[in-house]
Length: 435
Image 1 (cartoon, rainbow, N blue to C red):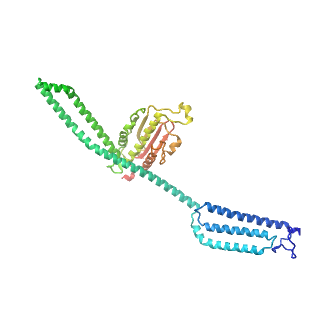
Image 2: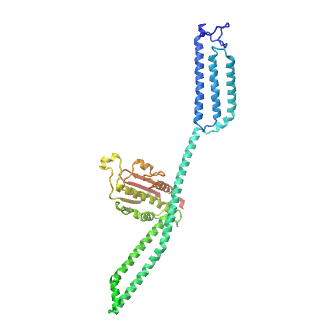
Image 3: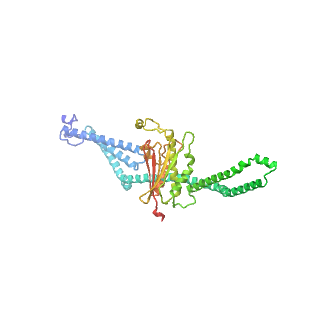
């Protein structure tokens, strides 16, 4: 009876559950090991399912997964009973467990049937990837639109403010400028009259002589025309500033218009004139204009002026930093001999030219600190800025990039550390939709 691993003796010569294993110990052990491994696998699968369900709170059809887990557990128990009944004939318990397994399996099958159409309706991984890509694109477009709306509202408010100030200044300045010539004519006539009196009556009364000496009449008649001339020059200057403000705001013009880009650049430079002047430790920033013969360009004038303002403001800020000193990478220290080389001759060059007959290029070049490649790649990203917190929004360059794209052009940044920075605006001189 050693063949049966010390089983109890039975008169019919069979193992208790009635299966004949041909009296071979190896065959018995084969069934024992197989049932044990199957049961172990069955018990590990539900553990993994429960862990997965708990981690994925958003997972649909959780109940069916739990039913599968219960079904698999009972399947594992049936295999354990197969081993148990090799020694102990508890067939009723084994049959009862098989019956429960059957009930759970049938219930799981009935539950699964109505879920199949819903499961088939779930998107495939490829569809989810496409949807995710579309969602990312939509989010990027929303972010771009949001930044553009913010900047557009900002520039619209600035434009309205500038236009309002220009209008309010224009009225009194026009009054002053328009009356200077008349006042100058009246003054000349009065001086002629006084001089004529002096010729006709060389012997003046003592009171008149005293007053003439008190008011320094001889100096007055020479200085008064100079004062009027200075007032006229100042009034002309204010008129030019007002005209530049109106050109910059462009509120009284159609959206798309054929304009001279040089006027927009000059207007922007005039507005930024105070920032270009030296202040304290900062020397004057020299502006070098190398204008080519540009045709009038079809564009949104106010928006392009906004681009010029952003690029020139960025150049001014960069040059202010370079005057204090440029932090450079360690690899450049040996070449430069100084970790913070200062710039004592800040310059901005503005070059305009025509290429390919229908393309116009505006280049804004500064001789400041330049940028690293890492910064250059992010320069047009929304909300990216290298300025301290509170000193910039990080929207200017992003909006400028969008505006140039809107014109069917390109905005490029060419730079290297300690080699300055060049921004190139290339736009078509004619927009087909304009005609």
